[in-house]
Image (cartoon, rainbow, N blue to C red; front, top):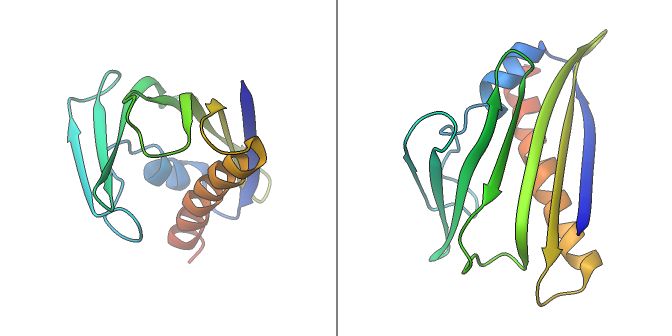
Length: 138
């Protein structure tokens, strides 16, 4: 398995960042995402993200609002991303200047060199954290 870990600080209240990143149904259409559909609620909920005609299906595996963390997995074998057996955990921790976001994923690269897939996944995480930073830091 290959692992990617992104740790970034945001100068905002941990709960405010959680309200954005911890909202499994809160992914917005924009950029490469052309449609979002969520079925179910809580652990077991499934979100389908359409990107340029391709579909990524993710399931919420664990959700802990008290500790500001959740885990999700990609569950469709025909996922267009060059990876398989993907699972990730997002954890938000309050610190002196705001909070720290830890986003860690593990997967098996598929059809592309490991470093290229790690770079792609790293970009997804940093992009989502940047969106939360922009929304909360004012």
